[in-house]
Length: 110
Image (cartoon, rainbow, N blue to C red):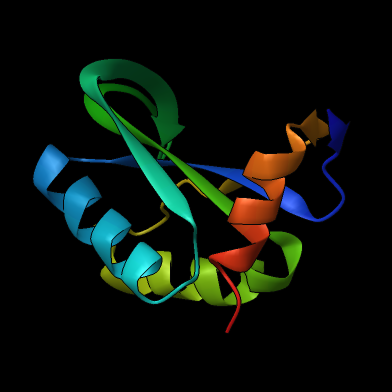
């Protein structure tokens, strides 16, 4: 186990599995992320939007990337996403296996 340094986990919710798959494939293909997991069981989201409390079923994506790639990843997610304000929440990866974090870093190199 080693420190995560620049490794990041990004949470993005989508309106459909199809949209999540499209975004995931594009960001991995373009080396903006090493991996994107799509949670196939829907999540129930309750949120405030335009002054009202809303509820909807969404698809959660967990995207693994590096701090260096975040600006381009965010730009691409926003470009491909159907929401006016897509979720883009970044969590620093505190630690992980040396091999996994090395793999992550290698697969987002430009």
